Image (cartoon, rainbow, N blue to C red; front, side, top):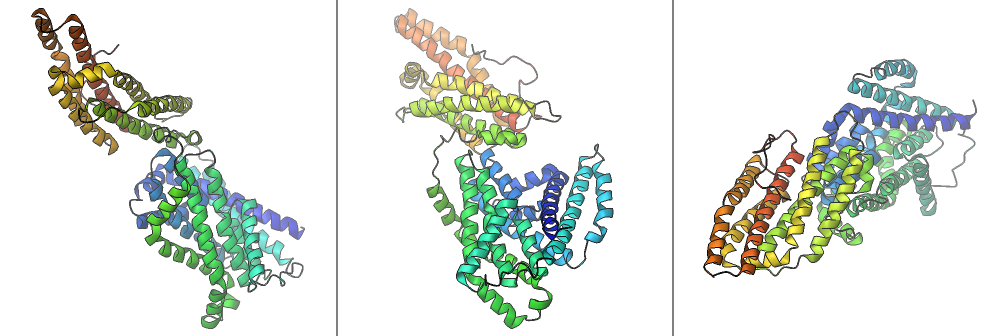
Length: 545
């Protein structure tokens, strides 16, 4: 076979093997990996450990970063939380290089790859067991990786005397830059830094590249891999763009430091471990990859907050805050889209209830017009987003009930905002003495719920309290009506004042009703199995037309 075909085929097998192993490992880990990634990022250090472990498991820093971009868009992670994961992903991605250097060249797994491929195919055919099928896919990818390395070795070995990179000496600044560019371009073409690193290590093993040259190519691969994350942010939210380009900027900075440190590293290895330059050059190259990525994390961790502020300044928020969670790019990941819908509607609900509390406040001048327009825009955006997700509801286990709950929240938010815009009744409620105690009580209840919604929790107890409050207002309406009629009969109120008073009372009751139903459906959206008062088919105490 022609050496060029062997080389290209080896790269192709490696790439396909990486994709198959990544996909299989993701299926094997299932939803646990997603939840673990979203939970284990409370501090930058935890984020680093999480990013490194996740990338080591799925064998792809790009997969980790793209997943993190999705989590940020869905509101599962804040931008600051993602920085630790990005830092750690660079450490985790070096595992592939260690696999190639320690196993691919030492143990020659290509000899047993074909029997293992047969076992992988048998496992993959077990369609009734997704985890077994995932294990089969991961094992098949693992085998293809080392078959690819075997073909790469054979192909590149033929070019040992043909390819002359002697004029590109890594101790020359310009030549070293060209080698970094080669690594970056190779990663752009293959869309895999692991493939570029494996190619560089294989070329080093075949004596096509020297250690400094291979290390320079690895630096380029580390920078080139960020393009995938940058592509994933196209058309995405501001938070996702910040995440993707934070990865780019961080890797470029780390790459520049590694580029400057490379001559000192080669000199130090030659001084202290001269035998390694002959017997374990691949290990020395991978060690350089690990050392400069780990050193970058150690240096970056104390600067996480200033770095986050810099990225936020470079990429300011342009999309209205309440609209941002409903990112159309998330439609490709229905599960992340449902999370974005639920969390986005909760944020919207908190804003609407908070606006209602502000409307009732006597201490604040009402200035909610622009905010209300943003809320109504967010309602329409979220409703369309929910309908698009719902179109995929034929899949078994799809969280349809959560989507329905979110749609109910949007409906009640829209009606609540409609009530808030009724300035004459709001003004009368704030200024009329008969409503002072009621308005103060409503404002306190609403403010309490805003805090709960912003903390991402809505307890059954909270929903029950709001229901009881709504029911008390409903039961008390006849007494209030009789009191107003009595005042009108005695001449204390005009007919217009009586009508306005009755309308204002209905306005207050409906505000409480919508806030209660928002609270109930927020609880259901978070936990569809929850049961709150009056959820067993009974009629709500207030029927809002």
